[in-house]
Image (cartoon, rainbow, N blue to C red; front, side, top):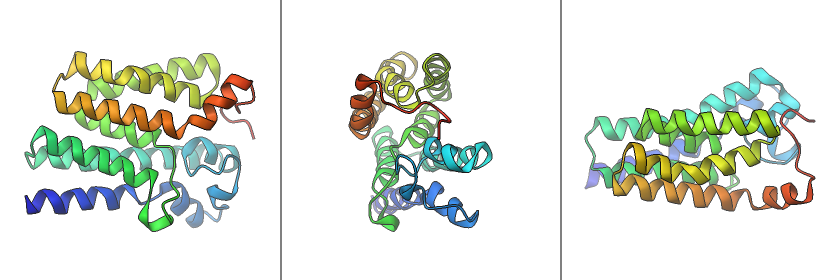
Length: 196
């Protein structure tokens, strides 16, 4: 129990390391919270930092979800503990203790968590995101649709009740974090991928 508690705290602290804020500072770029949409994530960084920086941010955010989950599984935690590690790492990204709890929307970190739960679930979610993004050029819409289908994919591919609940919680939090984007999509004012 003590090991589980310590590891859950570790997962939250890992999630709290904002790749966008840290790397932009290293690269001499503006704080992403002061640019574009104000979101410290790969899509916003792409607008002012370019593709290379956006890819680094994307990978960093993905690993924050993937590594804690894989380590928890390697340590043979129960499915419930693994799911808790995943949601806590995700919450760390959304509400990072190191950055006044001003985090990103969590798309890449959620993908990392799902990849850690099941490679096939993660890849399926990624394919949905890519297809919708290629058709709409809207990152937020792609994330929302991928999140909507993720619990069903978990149910079909790795039907542990704990993981299904994890996917539902991730989806609900992602939808909540994108509530302003949903309004912009409905108004036709949502920015497209790569648009400055």
